[in-house]
Length: 291
Picture (tube, rainbow, N blue to C red):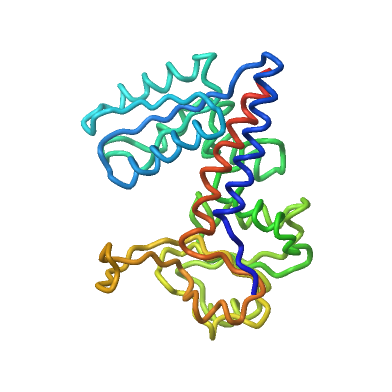
């Protein structure tokens, strides 16, 4: 069993990006600049955005963090987006989700300039991704592709089962892995809450992408020997034996599934660290496209 180490891989990617940024600066080119808007005081969102700011510093990016109160109106947020859209110093920006309930998330995502949409959520970029055209691939699917490629996991001709159909992970992964690309050419089955005979399907899978949001859902009796498992889920479970009072688990019952796996991602330390690394990669790409 080989652990797909997202922590190490993301560190490698950040080092590669830092070298490219140094090269840009030596040539007198613009330094990549990533901006983030956060509305409200959601603890997980603040932690995540702060991690993005630190990652920008690490690789030599410029970064801007715009903090708005939770009672910010939709109109005011749209105005902030309009300013970033025309700011030539900003290469890419994100609006941290979730947003307060009084703000229409889809309307906000639609307002972002697709050329600066480094999260890859704008319909223009989703459409280009579906057509296998050059675009920003959203960070989590992009990170999964990168992990599979760097660990030389063969996908061509394999049966991939994707658990979950979210717009952020499940749907794009099913499209990307079926495409004619280096990490692709797979036969993909996408399963969800209405899928019947799920165990029969997962037992056929060479590769399973688990993004269903149910802790430790995928058990050993649901997978065949020599499977590759990518666990996208992360949930806090109470655990009195831990100093923190909780432990983090994924959508996969790791200890039992790992015994049957050729490759598997841990939680934490698998897909999670890759997300920020690929956001940085998209921002570098946006900067290079601009010049």
